[in-house]
Length: 105
Image (spheres, rainbow, N blue to C red):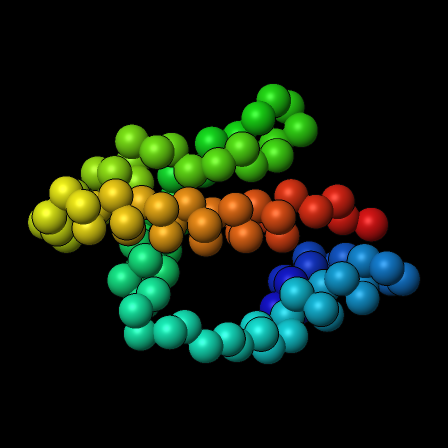
């Protein structure tokens, strides 16, 4: 897709850039989510536009906790389950940050 869009503009990629574009267009890696974790994954996905960025480098710092709490409140869970859901989302967040903030070479 990216290569096709660039080709439409008369731009061709070579070397590492071409390899990166092909890798990005490959099928996403599928993984299993245990049923007891599915609602936490849904909550994380609903918060996907709530990232806070650090400085000019654009590194993701984490999710806006207040936004996550707002999304969790929509589920109308008892308070103890809300805290558990927040913990689950923060665990997912840490894993996502470790991948998203890897240097690209």
